[in-house]
Amino acid sequence: MATITDIAKKANVSPATVSRVLNGDQSISVKDETRKKIYEAVEELEYVPLIEKYSKRKNLSEELTFLTVTAFSQETEIEDPYYLSIFYGIELECKDREINLEKVYRSGGEFDFDPELEINGIIAIGSFTDDEIENFSQMTDHLVFVDTEVDNCKFDSIVVNLKKVIDKILDYLFENGFKEIGFIGGRDDNKNDRLDQREKAFIEYMNHKGLYNEDHLILGEFSIDSGYKIAKESIDTDNLPEAYVVANDSMAIGVLRALHEKGIKVPEDISIISINDIPTSKFSIPPLTTVKIHTEFMGMMAVRTLKERIENKRALPITVNIPTEMVVRGSVKVD
Image (cartoon, rainbow, N blue to C red; front, side):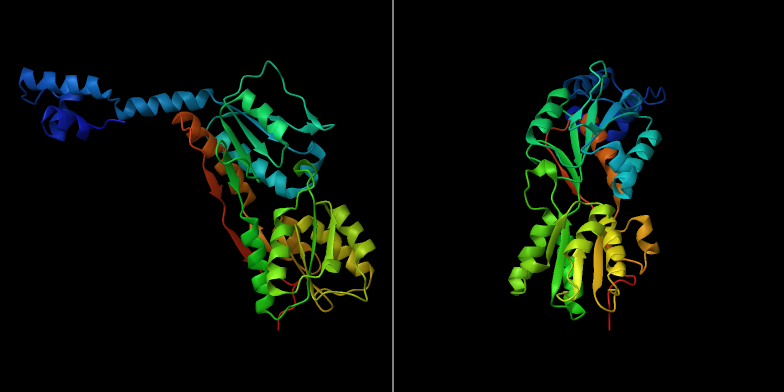
């Protein structure tokens, strides 16, 4: 993209002279030959004034329509503050940038797309099958995935490095003297029963320490109800680890209730630490120690990344890793 400096070098004049000529400054005395060189350089380098570039981008922004596709049902989003917060960030950013926003949920295992809808790009939230991703790519060249990283040779992704999150949690527990640690998590139906990143990272870390105990691995679904159910059915009061790492706060809240009903005290008898820092986590009993994921910011970055890709005609994909932070409350026993 040519600049005034490029034109000045080409015409063998100063940038100030180029600027004044292009802005129609009548007070400057420049030979006709020099003016001709400047305009020839402008044409050859295809220079576009900054104000014109901005104007084009502004007009483009006003015409943009983004489609969000969620890998789950509308009911799931309403029940899970994690995903609700991501969409809230998307909604806020689209409103601020005057971008039209449409939305499609998974219903009965499928997506009901409006064939008449004209879109500029798709924000896909959650995990999808390979066939679904291929279908999205047929609808638009501009795709960004949130909360999952797909083929990074093609698509943009807004993600959190969950391996680092688990490592951070386990480092924290080991620093505070814990050795017997279990994991409560789940599997995603759209990932063909592959190991969840959190579960995989936990197993790798504990195996490296020589302390992995399969008896302390409990799997269900990523919801309050599932956390409650699997904790109620699977946690043996006579074979407790010192702590459980729970895949998300929603599950952890269900686990806390089940432990309370079993007469197991947190953190006196067992410590619980989870991930996300949803609003209710600080009001649980006890308040959850958790790793905060900036979900609203993830949604905002998805909009910004997609908009930038469209405006700059960027073909190379990027992955944006959102940082996390530990929020220490009362569910981990610390000496």
